[in-house]
Length: 374
Image (cartoon, rainbow, N blue to C red; front, side, top):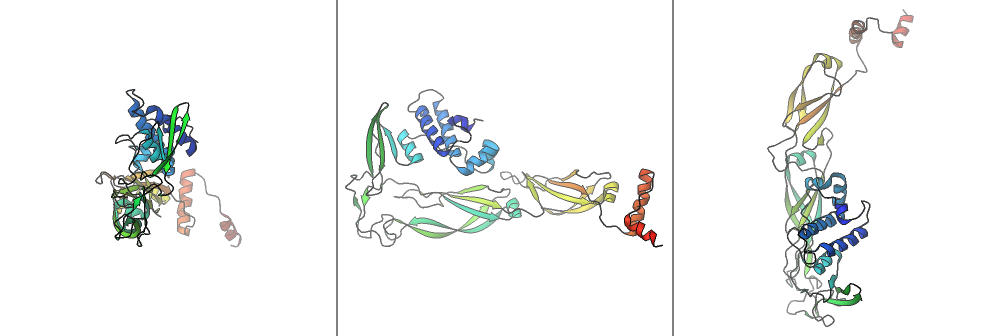
């Protein structure tokens, strides 16, 4: 797999500004409209994928630790921003860095074209067993919905917005600079209409001219079996509503799994510890232990050593894409030396000591004191 840092030509400790600068340079070089080499398109996709990952703190941390496979296992989209195609360079720089950038004559776009709403994030805490077996959660989110009074226009019912006189309805103003590379035009949003191309004389009283209002919404989230801590789910069209009739954004649900007091998780496997007595370790035994599927019998073979591991197959965590496939329950055995024993047990241990070593055990301080008073 490609190294994202190497793809952009930056060090692993590169700042976000350095990553942005590297992306601009590489995007100009490998954009398919500029570079006609057969592998330019694939390189451009890799550049976009690398940029998107390294500019997101959560994605970057996961990638640094686990690589691209770790991103997939954590539920992140690894297709990159250009998996479905490319825009021109000015559109790309506009979406990534804000404002518009162009070469020569800048392209104009309709400021009142439909635009997708913003994506939202919701953090949800669940119990360990809920993550293992899946569950449903009722949640509430605050998001933007289209104003019911003005139907998204931002103008008081019965009135209409007018074309902005400053930008002529384009929503943009431009500043052109001549450089050694040619004419470079930087385009920014119109300060008077804030990029909308329209001015509202009578703002809607319900949404204050915004065209959207914030509302609380209730959702039922179905969490699949097998999710892990920091797993991420995407709920399409549950984010903020679009602008000018555009589609709604998505809602990203980040799951926080509470640690269990009894179970530890390692991938699809569950790990617990089991304390046994020296007698159980020597002679073997059959015990019952708690698993995710209830109490199960476990055979301890004679002569087991402290630190040995036993396994109960198929009672671990379900695979998130194949719930019928489950991991195992691993039991780590610890031979526990008793700190307090009865007089009868002491005599038996003394006899065992003599058999094993061929000598008598030393008297304890308590036994010496008792002997002195006889």
